[in-house]
Length: 208
Image 1 (cartoon, helix red, strand yellow):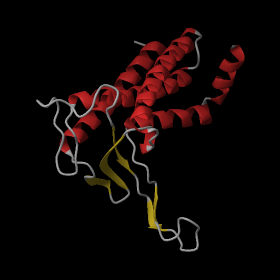
Image 2 (cartoon, one colour):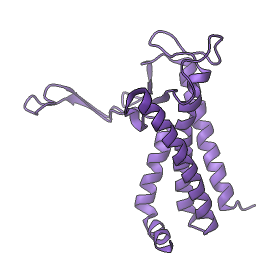
Image 3 (spheres, one colour):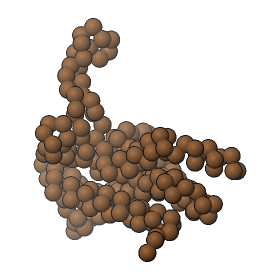
Image 4 (cartoon, helix red, strand yellow):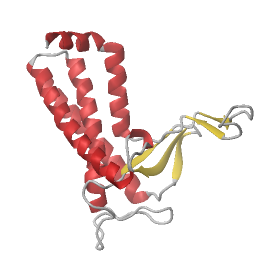
């Protein structure tokens, strides 16, 4: 049985969301903040951290910024969902539809953290693993939860040369940001669109 593009989109979103949330929940309920273990040598680690802001650990605006960012994410998610519907209705190339579906899945994955993790988990600390649905309640209100990150790729480590302005003598790590499957889903989709789906994107733009 051949699946329609719509069903492929739904299944891809569902798969990414399930894997993303399963991994985040496992990390949240089995690791303390800052805890890590190697997956492939010293260059691929699972390292538990949380962030209040955007992808790859960037932050902006404190508590108010967090609320604005969460509301913006919700609005963007609705817009992306409608865009997928629009693409399918206009019989856009399957690869492009699935790429946008990956962006939707990644955005939804991080929105789930921001919206609900503060309600259903206790605080993660450097000394104590969080518990799910604690009797004392969660660590934050709706839309103020923190996003769980865990993928860390310190491929190259060293020290900046002393002669380099501002950075001289500081530790150097590439790739320093710690991210999650939802972030990876969004980034992968953007690269696929830029490398392989630009013609489809241009064609849809001209169709407006």
